[in-house]
Image (cartoon, rainbow, N blue to C red; front, side):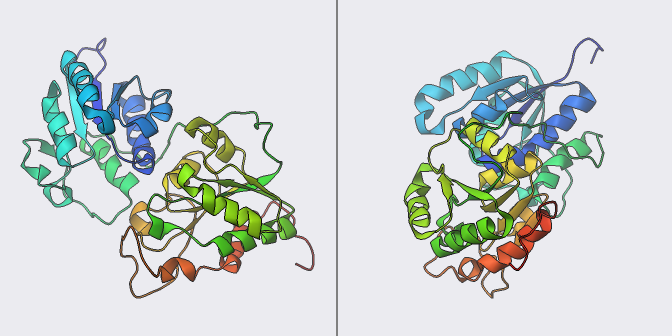
Length: 334
């Protein structure tokens, strides 16, 4: 390529928020080291972050819930430009088909062992086989390694507002109570007691976050707890959530997208894990609490008796929180 023609790279990553957040360091590395123009095919949930990210030059929105109207525009956009590289980071049939349809010089995907839905049959270049149990963020960075861009620094390029929103207390800890998979959720009594202990020991307020589906759980935690909680579950946009996380002293969270967002923002994270494999999909940086039970990790979405989560106690969380809040004086005698 000529010096005056930057590489055009199309990233196909339509997954959940956490998956997209874990892919950002790859985009940042490609942008900074290759001076490339990064195009990203993304789903609606992650669009607000991707559309304004400094490493992403162009976002292409694909709404699978309304694919009949969305797909023609997506096809037009990925066919009208000649991409130097098209990276299939989703490794499913849908992303593979979109990768094939894109007007690309080179198409690159995961090795056969890590492909899903038989997408190894697509005629892509394949990155070398590697450990499928390593953290997903590192697996995405293998694409940079394959392109000859090797470095140890990991950057997400994300930040929230410099000014704390007026509706937030100060200082505070975020309790992110939600999880897309019900089996990943912690208990109402656990969060309720934890909020009381945080307020008593650290003199910190607690701010609850979660999706609209978590509003009833948040209400029950609020009713049960004697702590003065700020309940924002179901009441924030993604941009607002980013600002809430940005100004927190720490984030206590289940396995869900905002956990990865908090990590990307450089926050102190304490993650509660049960069904999921924290070494593969846990916080890239932070503390993980998990109990040794015979059935975990099982990666189940639902569970009638989630003992792996139920056995986590508020006292377990407080031990880790004391470590991450070492700059805050603990009340004597507590």
